[in-house]
Length: 119
Image (spheres, rainbow, N blue to C red):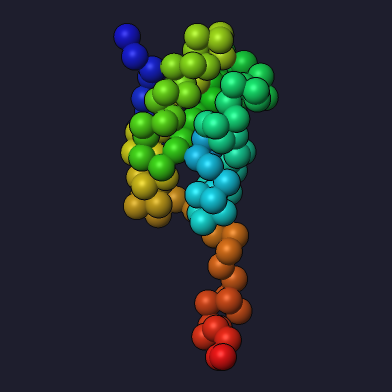
């Protein structure tokens, strides 16, 4: 059996009930957009940092990436290490499409109105 995958509504309920949301995309993707309650743990750093994911059987971590492929790989690795986790089906693509809240660190209202510098 492969890693458990959950739909967005289930993931949001799990997060509300206390499950951590772990974003395994890279820093540049995180800097573009991420869920406000997420913690960044890039897949490229997982081997060194997997112990940072809480091992809570009652509230398995919800793992998210861009579309669900990397998060499924991470969940499989976490489960092999004894850390319960589930993958968010559709990743941040599904999260954004649903209208769930997001943070866009590089965008502020002032930055959106600027035209760039003329040379």
